[in-house]
Amino acid sequence: MIEISLKRYSVRIILITTVLAFGYAVLRYNVFGTVPWADLPIFIFNKGISLASFFLLTLNYSLSPLEHMGIQIPKKLLDTRKSLGITGFAYAFAHLIMSLAILIPSYYPAFFTEGGTLSARGGLCLLGGVVSFVFLWIYYKSFKSNLNLDNKIIVRITSKKSIMYILFFIGIHLFFLGYTGWTKFDTWPGGLPPISLISFIIFCTGFLINLMGRK
Image (cartoon, rainbow, N blue to C red; front, side, top):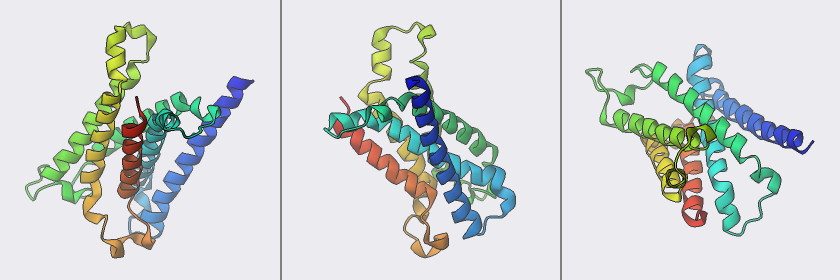
């Protein structure tokens, strides 16, 4: 019964996060913005799932450090970390695949030069995303018991330094993804901030929490 209750609690958090993230993407880009509804299945869904991914991963990494900082975290919420982390990782993987599928000048003009090659900004954004995903993949793979990894290797992979590397490269990805539009308030559709800015704020919060509270 406890396991079923915990599973339902995890599903509820994941479902609410996903619906809110996707709903925000639709509201900002389709309803108030000028993005056509035809872009809903991939372009808009990709934005929503990326926001949900960053939130779930940051929550997963930050619960224990928050507890170490003296903040009371319900045990029920602490026990959801594995589910939140796995789902966040799965969303990140989906985000990576969809982003690569639509990485073309018509969707991301700022990422390309006039000659059609990646610009410095596009390259740094892509590098940050790919490197952070590789770190994420290694991190979650280390928990597989059938890998037979040496305990010292697992300790290094799951150490504070590795977590900070993951968060740092996520920050690089987010910064170069959308920093140019973060202060152009008059261009925000419906006055709603860009998803990249919201994700970056979530990242900064998680980074500081892990820096101060992770042992």
